[in-house]
Image (tube, rainbow, N blue to C red; front, top):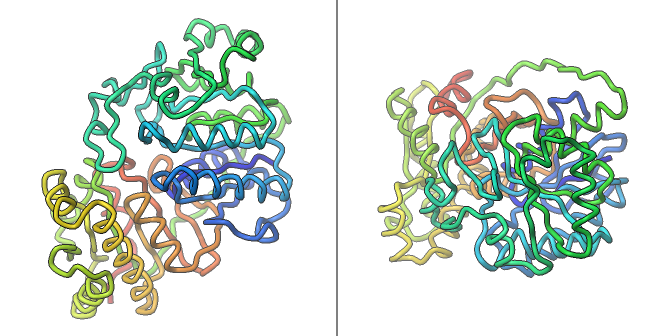
Length: 417
């Protein structure tokens, strides 16, 4: 079994669906479940943490507990899944977490790449590109929690870790797995982290074959999917696609991400005439009050399509709120409110939750007490439906993922009563 640890909930679902596409049996688990909860016989088990923006010691502690759970469950290889835009700060958490995992796995070398071509993320000469823009020139430059103002992966990594990092150039990657393994052997003892260039899915597959026997690998969903395919090819297992229909039933959209793509998707909800309610942290600086007002609004809705409840704001308005309440306090209020709203909606008969944003998704999963679920069909690349142990269906969308009409399309089947 391959054990995957993700630093946020939507990243976990992104990685899980990358394995499912290859016909592998995949379970996804939220938080730190008992080892007995992890279903036996899985090809891959994904543990979704909410550690991306935690203080580094807390992120490291949770990650090591997750690694131990996966080892007990039978994982032979660990994969640390981080965001394809390398979301982090100069102090972490990607570097500190990988330092700790390397010690846990007993390895002195970790291959890592955020490249995910299907999502428009590629790496060349050690630089990360987002839809052909350098990371530092993309929308991530103004991210409210993890602003990315540098595009060089080695500089980003060396600022938050020890051991040093180097690039595996594209020419070496194009020569295939044997050349990549030779580069790894040459680097042992000289550097801890190797960032191979990857422009295409074929590049990722070559890297995956080169690291199949490494105890620890890290990266985005692109490399995760390539590793899944490489394992299938090594085993000689045929790739299948077990079709499952998208779930139906009463739905709601809950959005908290302030990414440009989520804001576009919210605008599409408005244009489609969907009922919409914004959680205003300045209007009611208390999570319970915010949630109560939102649920009262929901109760007064007439019959019609699935509504939207959101806290997402454009950067200027978001900074105004954060300047008044503080970053942590505003996030605490809004995430707490989203969780209470989710519980209230479940009690009112909602069975499908479409969530936009990693922190938002984590709050919903925690509030509903969801421990895990089975990966189902994708509503967008890397955005699968999950049929949970609560007999609910959840779609946990990373802020940057999906076409502009995703929230509308995912919530169309079924109506508000």
